[in-house]
Image 1 (cartoon, rainbow, N blue to C red):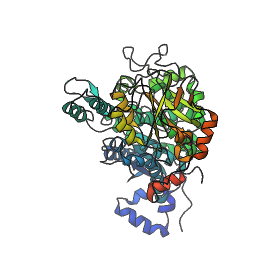
Image 2: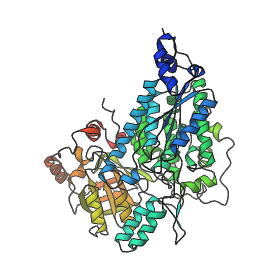
Image 3: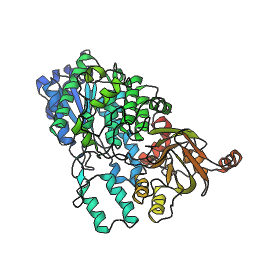
Image 4: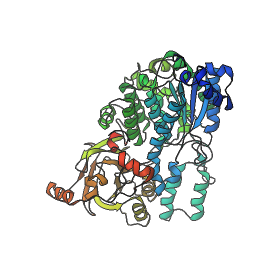
Length: 566
């Protein structure tokens, strides 16, 4: 019979050891196992490689680098795959409904393979947005020694005429400029053709780079994994070290839930704010925390955000991309600055086996001649740009991204659209005008289903020069590339009887990022009557992944997870 599980091979020994496991070993010999490999800890290497998107097109090689690192440290690595959905390619189409759903599928698939095959430790490598929280959710569920590796940022494109840097958001905003008559067909094609020069995730402080930074701050990546260019010797070395680190964590008995504590999540929130990161960080950190058994709520973002300044001058609201942050030193100098000012918990454990403070002990400040990250005395904003809003339009909360450049309050008249496509058409054809609050509803987790990102409408608003004159609110969500006066994650969503579902054209709406309120300015009696008369729409999907998601998903304010109510 099989032997008792080995402390350094707690799961693989059950699969590999003993005469009765000869069939198991026979199968493994066919995929490259030698006699000595059956005595080694097995490290699963979860690769999100795909030619679906430039974010992930290089990850097959990174997985082999991680495999080499694990093998050199005395383990036996096995590479396996999972899916990705490209947000940038599916954006503005019905396919975008699958984006957030893919986070759950990624988590399920990594959990399934790792659990089914008896891996003792795990390295996961992610590129496009949902890869990262999906990988972390799987790690939290499995609670086996694990390291996350970010696939790395793309380099900026260079416009052939202006020689200015450009990226994917440049293209989305160029669509609005084209609609406004500011760009010709040929000029639009030039922007389209130069903005994505090769492998790597979207280059600003959009969702991929935001989540990579949050995961590093959380302690689940090696130092500076978040701020490396996708095609670089630093990223190759990061993958090799991650394979080695997984074995070291196994030997030390350090598991993900030892690292992912409440204080670690507070560190992640702090870093996201200091970087001016994406609203999606709220959704994903809530989901990861739920999976890890940590009590984190949207109100923790307000509590932490009151004392954390925005310091990084990064796109979409700022001037620089992630490659620029990489060149001046990456994330560690920022974390050291936050630690020195008492905003980071230095005693949190990380995947190095050391604490945050120990990792940062010898980190040097940013060069004095750089302006990617502002000095402490001159922040971009003295407190958080991520605002959790409440009010009669969002009894369960909403998330706004207010940099201050667009102002801190907005009042206007509602112009209502049932879905993203209708709103985008109205913005491009000129129906949306100064003073409007664009309301896009039935795009929430249930109503979409899938909670699409509204990058196309927000970029069209900016491209048409209406960024300070038009607000946009939705029960959907935003790409990290969205900026302007935008409010998403409105809870309850329209499909669940939320007030956003009964807003009418011309209704006055007030958004206040100082009081953190979002208000439909009609009488309580009128609102009550409208809600009483509201009837749910027929569910769009009745079979398949989207239908299952709509049936199981929690609210956006709870992270839009699919196991909350199980």
